[in-house]
Picture 1 (cartoon, rainbow, N blue to C red):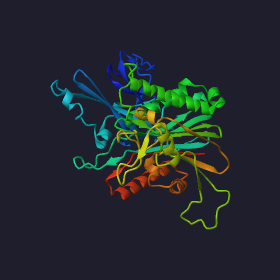
Picture 2: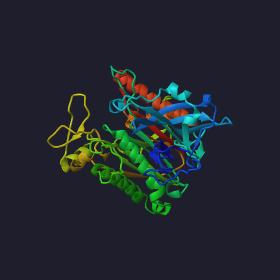
Picture 3: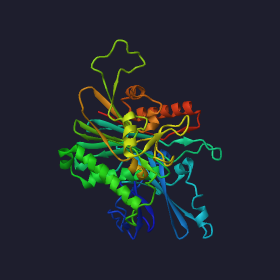
Picture 4: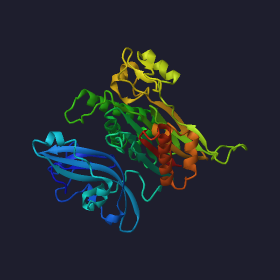
Length: 446
C-alpha cells in the first residue's frame, strides 16, 4: 500500500496523483487500506529489466523531504520469459535541511540509467493490465492492426553540461476502445512548445483519454465522428483556459499563455478514418499504388504516400492571409529564422506554427485551436499510417518515411526505431550535432 503523501501514476493516461489517507487526491480511484488495488510490483528477474526512456518526472516537497517520481517506458521479461512493454514509475525520497530546502530543490538530480537498472524491483510499479504502448512482445496484432509508438527526447548543445538532453515535449496518443467500443480507436501525436510545452502536451493527452473513455459513448461517436472530435478539442481548450484563468485551486499550475501544443489525431471507426490537425505535426497514409511505374528505382519502395493532414505554418499563403486578416503579423526575425506569427506591433511572443492548442496570447491574432478535417475509408492496398512530430518531417520526406517503414513492415518495433534514429541522424548532419528536436512517431499497420 502507498503511504500518505506518495506520488503515484494512475492508469494508461499517466496522470500523477498524491495519496492521502488511502484516497487519491484529485482522482476518482481509491486505494484499499488492506492492499493496493490499482498497482502491483513488478515480479521479474532484475537482470531482465531494461529502462528505455524517461518520459518525465514530478517533484513534490513535504516537511523538508523531496519526493520524486520518474515516469519511464520499461521493457522486461516475466516469469514465462514473455517480453512485456509497459509504463513504470520509480519513487524516491530525498531529505533536505530547512535552510537548503528551497535552493537545493532544483539541484537534486534524478538517477542515471545505470542506477535505475540497479534499483530493487519493489521500487518500480506499473498499472495492472495496462500498457502505455498498447502492445506486448513487440507489435502485436489487435483487431487486425499492429500499433507501435517510439519517442526520443531532443538535444541542444550546452557547453556547461555537454550531452544533456532537453525535456521531451512530444507525446504519442494511443486510445483503444473509444466510447467503450473495441472497433473505435484514436491515434496521434502532440508536440509541445514553449517553456511549459511538456506540461501542456501531457495534460492534453490525459484530457483526450478522459474524454474518449469517460465523457462520450460509442453511439455518439458513430453518429457524428466530426462532432466527437470537435467536442474533444473544445473539451481540451476549455480545460486549458480554466488553467489560464486560474478558476480552480485544484487545477495544475503551468503556463498556457505562451506555451502550447500541436494536435494531430485520427479517429478510426471500423474502416473509416477521420483525421484532424492543428499545427505542424503530420499524419500520412501509405498504400500500394494501383500500377507501379516502370521507372521506379530499386531504392524506391513503390509505396504511395497520401497526406492526411496539412501543415499549419505562417509560410503557407492561406494561413498567412488568415493571420493577417485576424489582426496578426507574419515575419522572419533573422536571415535563417522561420517565419513566425507575431502581434501586430511587437516581435514577442512569436510562434512558427499558425494554429495551436494553448498559446492564448495569440487568439486575438488568429492563432487558435482551429482543426482541419480529412476523411478516408480504408481500402485494399492501404498498408500503414504514420503520425509524427516535426522532428521526423523536418528532414525526412513522406517517401523516405515510406521506404524505412515498408522495408520493416513485419517488425513495427524495429521500423519505428529505425525511423526515429534516421531522423536523429539527419538532424545531426544538418545542425552539425548541435541540436535535434524531440522525435516521436506512432505507426499503425492495417
